[in-house]
Length: 175
Image: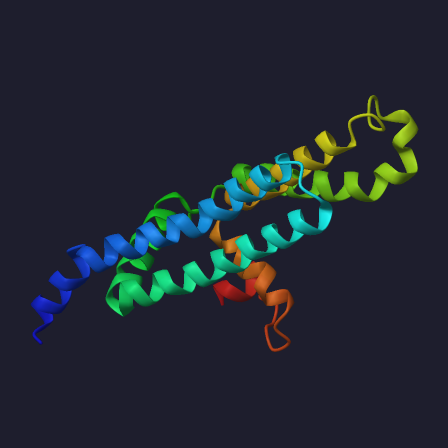
């Protein structure tokens, strides 16, 4: 098969790709909509649990079946589309110093708050009655900070876990 035909096959969604996407969407909808529906029927605990477990298992089987129906070209097509979309909105490689400082503050505040809150919860207004909101707010701030910090931050974090990586100061880079 020529390279042009291979590229055309990857970019032209056929019936296998459309069927695979349909099965994959069904595998997501089944537990998301089915389990709450089963819970609201008022069945006994054992029956409700059994039906919910069957929905979860069938969703996993449908997910695997979706990949099998799509085949390798369909899977690669979807993967390239999703990764292309995510790269478009991903963090830039380098950011300005001001943006980096704001990102570090956004990254540090939820971590420090999580450490200090158990000891200072009496002085935080509404903390005891709105614990979930504080936790969700901190998580959102932490995840958002990773996009503000940029791609170089990920390299710095990665180097923490690689024994052979060495620190290189700005003076060493110039020489």
